[in-house]
Length: 152
Image (cartoon, rainbow, N blue to C red; front, side, top):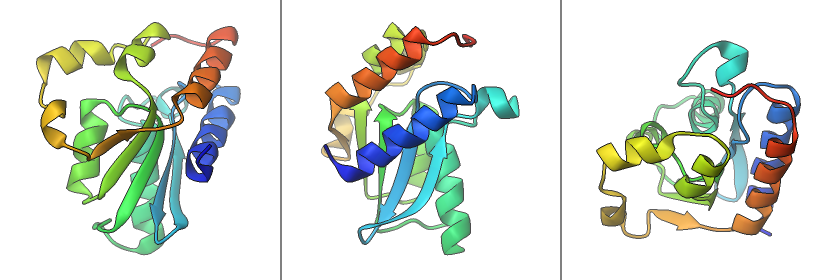
């Protein structure tokens, strides 16, 4: 298991146990150091844009006092939705590592597939999106499914 993905999973677990939102945790890494963390806080903030990736990007930018995350990589428990994918690109993140797929997100009640059908182009990103540690992230998703949680 990649240590950065493990930290993203731990971040997601904290968020779902606090009932902040779905099982999506994220870390931003620069030069081998975690510079940003976030988890889904859609329910906690009453904000549909408070996805784990967005929260981690904001955290990294504030910590590094920049709006440019060139040289950073992002690790997240679920394949980013289009909003988050574009945010990663706007922030100049060099590569995105994800655990569960968009189809996995749908299995636990999220509607990413709907937007993926409307906004295509992932296949044109080459090696920008890299899947890793899916089994560990699926375990997290199963844990989330077993909990009492608000669907949104």
